[in-house]
Length: 197
Image 1: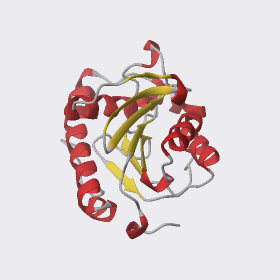
Image 2: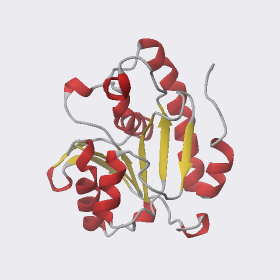
Image 3: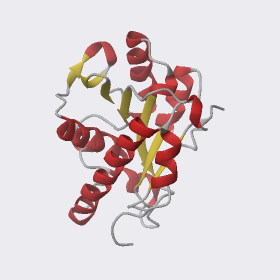
Image 4: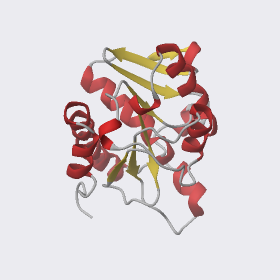
């Protein structure tokens, strides 16, 4: 397992999700939504890139990617992009949803297992390592309708308003990560809760 001091500069930020209008604004696509937010804030144009099987944009030294392989095959897109630019997995930050965290919380980790998330499972398999940073965005859980219906359900209008604040904080965390390192970002942002409980 890598330590915070061994993490390279973040060169690629990947947001996980599923392509297609039927998945727009679903909880499982919060990674896509964050990439769109970062592209807007940082002035990066996103467009389809067939060689990466994804939606891609860059403003060096940062690159943004939304795999369009569907969640369960996210690793294919990441591997293609990493191979093309010769990126070490430790320089790739993966953003994805987490039902075990309430909406309003984020969690940064340096490495680790898939934790049951199929997108991360695919990435670990395709990159051949679990040593890549990731940032999880809480989407909460619902006892009504089951886990699948919850993650594939759309954010409510109220939740979308809260997401705007969450994305502002997440962008700050990524900026700290890039400027001062992942350990600093973890110490500042892993314990906070955005907005009202």
